[in-house]
Structure formats: structure tokens, C-alpha cells
Length: 250
Image 1 (cartoon, one colour):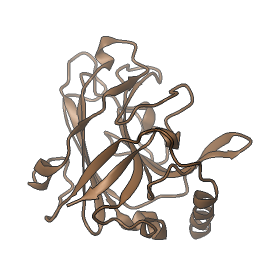
Image 2 (cartoon, one colour):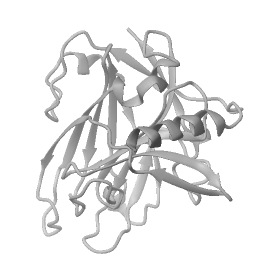
Image 3 (cartoon, rainbow, N blue to C red):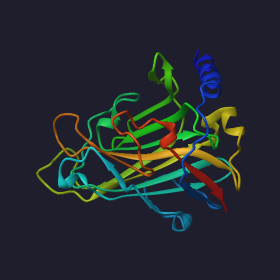
Image 4 (cartoon, rainbow, N blue to C red):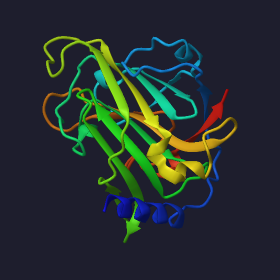
């Protein structure tokens, strides 16, 4: 059944594409690592010193001064995986979700959306993880039917993730420092879709990296910051024309 679901997603990925992006697209250079990356939530490997460091400068849904917190993003690649590192300043570490395919996006949460080709297709892979390492992973379909979008949550890929944090989770009586998240996404997660435009020097994939930042103990209010700007945040963060490009370089 899972294989049928994945094949169904594959068909829609290529049948529900949007027109090539007309605006100028931002490019993030992903450097290759020639050493093993240990997923421990720490940047102990020399390769991380070579990675491009980018901030999530585009902030949405901010209502309080404490919502404006710095975020740094890094990415690496090799012949078997893509590696991500998120570094978040956070005065109020907050998390509730414990289950897979739940709603970690209502917590402090790191997210990545990927289309494994250099075009804004209507379908993308998504992984969202909170500080408890509870993940919401899916294949997302924009405008699936009657202008409704949906995520296929039966897609449960194997990937590695580790989190570190400085502070106390769910205790707003003190001021915390922040948290980090390191992730390894094997290229096998994308199946043969990842082979259409293979991960190799000079090739491009489409993506968006995001942060959800929840600072209130109660309710679901959170602010969102992104690597690339969102044209209409009132719609959602899944619009492929808002994505940028990752370029694989040595």
C-alpha cells in the first residue's frame, strides 16, 4: 500500500507542475563534504566551517519583540545524503508534540521543503521536526482538487535527526539561549525522483527552509521565518513559486 501511495505521488508530482518561475530566483550554494558527518546536533566536523551560512531574514506573524529571534542555516551534501544544520536563538523553548505525523509545526520547529528538480512543481517533499524530534513528514500536493491542497502523511521516510538545547523546555519563568537541529536526509528518501536531476556538482534542486517559533505556553500562536521571502503569507508557506534553489558545488 505504501508503494502504491508513493507511485501515486510520483505521477502527480510530474503531472501537476506549475509554469517555470518568472521572478529572479535566489540560489543557496550547497558545498560537498568529504568527511563523515555524525548526526549529534553539534558542528564538530570541519565541513560545517565551509558551509554557506544564511539567516532566516523574512519574518511573518510576529506580534511581540521576543518573536524576532535570529536563525542560521547550513547545508552540505555527499554522494549518499543531504545534511542540514539549524541554529536558533530562542528565549522561550517550547514544545508539545510527541507523535509522528502530528503537529510539530505548532511548536518550536525546523522545516525543510524539497522539490528534487530545478522547477517550481506543484508537489514537494516536506519534513518538520520539533525539539522532541517528533516529525511531520509528507508529500504535499498544491491544488490537488477544487483548489484544495493536502499532504500525504503515509510517506514516512527514514532520516537521522538530533537536537541540542540550552535552557528549559516549556518553562517561561526563565530566559533560554536557544537550540540546534542537525539532520541527515538520505538521497534514497526521494526514490527515483531524486535521480531525474541527480545530486552532483552543478545541478540544482528547488527548496525552502523555515522556522516555526512558538513562545507562548498556551494556544497555537507562533511566528514563522524563512530563508526566502513569501509573497503572500496569508495563503500558506507551501507555494512553490516562493521557493529558491540549492546548487550543489564542491
